[in-house]
Every structure is written in C-alpha cells, then in structure tokens.
Amino acid sequence: MNTKMMGSATAALTRSLVVGLSLLWLAGVFGSGLVLKRLIDVKSDDEMQESGAIVMTLIRNTDDLLVAAALMGETKAPAHPGPAHDRFVYQVRDANGRLLLRSNYAPVEPFAVALQEGLVDAPPWRVLTLADPERSRWVHFADPLAERREALVEALLWLMLPLAAVLAFAVFIVYRASRSLTMQVQRTAQAVSSQDPQALGLLPLTGVVTEMRPAVEATNRLIARLADALEAERSFTYNSAHELRTPIAAALAQAQLLTSSTAGTPQGVQAQVLAASLSRLARLAERLLALARAEGTEPLTREWVDLADVARLMVDEFSRDRRLAGRRLRAQVEKVRIRGDLDAVGLALRNLVENALCHGVGSRTITVRCGTEGGSTFLAVTDDGAGVAPGDIPRLTKRFTRGVAAGADGAGLGLSIVQTLARRLGAALTMASPPPGASTGFEARLTWPPAIPGSKARTPR
Image: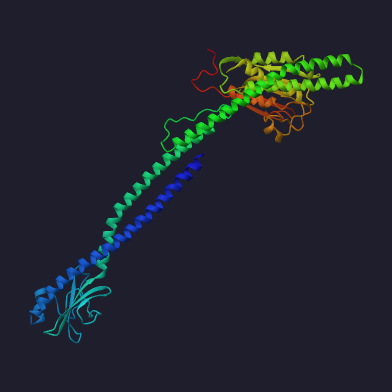
C-alpha cells in the first residue's frame, strides 16, 4: 500500500467522522437553540408581567397621569423618543385608543395591537396589554424582540464555542487513531512487498496492533504453505535433473558410438541428428540443475571473491570451446573484490558467456569485463553481434524465453539463472542492446551497489 492510498483511507475516515460529528453538533445546537429561545421568552414574559403589574398598580392608584409620570420619571405624550432603550417601555391609552402617556423610549405612535388583555407579538415588540376598567384606560407594556434575539445569539455562541472545541479535539483524536491504523497496514504491506518471491519469510509481528494481528498471522500461514510448495518444486527440479544426467550421458555415449560406426552411411546422418538432440537434452538437464542450485533462500555473501580472477579463469576455459567458431574471447579486468560466493559468481559468469556464444549472432569479439563505475562494482559480458530488439529485453530473464533474433538453439534458462544468482549475491542484472557507446551488440551486466559509508562491504578483512 502506497502513501497515496494511506492518505486516501485516512482522509476518507476523517471526512466521514467530521461530517457525522458536524451534523450531530448542528442538531445539538439547533435543539439547544429551541430550548434557549423558549426559556428566554418565558423569563422575559414573566419579568414583563411583573413590571407591568407594578406600573398598572401605580396608574390605578393615581388620579392624575402627570403625577404618575413624574413618579416614574417619564414624560407625557407626544414627547420625542429618546435613544435606543435597554429596558421595558409602556404606553397608556384611553378607551378610544388615544395615547395618554408613554415612557421615554416608547414609540410615539400607539402599538398596533387590539385593546384586550394578553400577550401578543407586534414586531419589533412583544406587547403585554392590561386593562383599568374603572378609569377606562389600557396599559401596553412592551419588550423589544431584538433584545431577545441578541440574548439568544449570545447564549448560543457561548454554547457553540466549547462544542466546537470538543468537535475539533474529537476529529484530531480520530485522525491520529485512523492514521496509526493505516500506518500499521502500510508497514504490513511494505513487509509483504519486500519479501523475495524466491525466499519467502514470515512477516514480523512486533508492534502490530491487536486488530491487525489476525490478518498478519493468516498471511504468515499462507506464506509458510507457499514456501513449502516452492521448496518442493525446487527439490523436484533438482532431483529430476540430477537423475536424468546419468541416462542422458549413457544414451549420448551410445549415439556417439553409433555415429562413428555408421559414418558415411544414411544411418550415420540419423545418428548425428540423434547425438545432437541428446547433447541439447544434456545441456538442458545441466541448466535445470544449475537453476535448482541457484534458487536458494539465503544470500550468497559468505566470502571475498576476486572478480578479475574469475573472469580470467572463465576466458581461459572457453578459449578452446568450439562454439567460438573463429570469434575472439578476451578479458578486460581490473582488480576488484566483492562479498559473495565463488561458485555462484562463476556459475553466473559461465551462463553469461554461454549466452554470448549461443546468441551473439554475427559477433567477432566477446569481452568479459569487471571493474568499478560510479562507486559500483560490475561484471559484464559484451558481444558486438546483431543484438536483440529493445522490446525483447524485459522478457529475456523469463524461463524458456529467447530473443526473437536468436540464431542458435538454447534452453532459454541462462539469463533466468543469472538473475536468480544475482538476487542471492546482492547484485542487479541489467541488459542493453546495443551497449552504451556502441552501435551494435548486446551486454549483460551484474552490478553491486556502492558500499554504505562506514561499512566494510568492499574491504577485505
């Protein structure tokens, strides 16, 4: 699982949580707003009725309204309205609806309400109407609705701020938790992707959360079964190739004897074809045996190997091979050493040289080179033949696959064996056609990475 996938899963989980909590939060705020509005209205109405009862009592017990106004510090209508109020206001009207008295901040015009007792909304006011039947007068006691809205908004703000902080904290906690779980999935995916398909190992359980442990354990059981199946396949290949060597060698000896005894006859031609077929079968058995040996599980880095010595020995061995057919086999080496296995390096180089001998069509020179380049150590085999099409290079390491332009028969296992050995030797196999700086030819190269600073991977003991 890559980082993009991890971010996507974490973002999706966090986004779902934010949306869910936000909806729940808004629903809570809306419900709280309805309750607060109800409480503010009830409280304000109660205060207005208490104040209205006091004013009504004063007006009823005072014959002259001017005296009542003086007692309450108010003026008689139609005085000009004062600045914005911050308390209740009232108006006194007669039976005909005329305005007799009003508070300083009350409207100049009578409230647009009926002359009957009760509470009504007459925007922008909430009006309480009380009657004085003895004097045929009506008192309107009013509270501005805007102040109630302001009180409601202020209460909601004080309620929303702590809830918003709780929501943000919850989102942060869930994001951390989801990210931690996603990181566990990513580490498990990285452990799986880093497994060598030829050397399966169990995934580490250290630090795995409880929820992920069953999945990792199930994966380990599957890997164990796959490793057993792979080992059985390797054993079968090795044992089969090993058992076939003796009967193939005996049959080849008989075919060669038959060829020599029937030379110059029609049966002799058939005997030569039979001997050639058995020779190819013998080479295939040898390649299968080499492949089975190469497909181990442990890295081959036990000893120091001088690549220059291996290259010279291989050139000397193949210099008398009849498959050269007039071509020149040479070595261009410098003294370099790698941490590896002598037999494995020799087997890899042997397959590279044989690949050049069999498939280097039209070449005149085959060169075995080793040295250092850009801090890396390399071992390469290059020929100046026709090469292969660039599109064929990626599939050359597949088993039983040869280039389309290959001009000789072969098992198609050589480069597959080299790639398997390269993995165990800690090297990388690269191929190029034509080689860098050349117009034709083919190059197969084993490259060991530069030494890590402070390590002794390139330094003899």
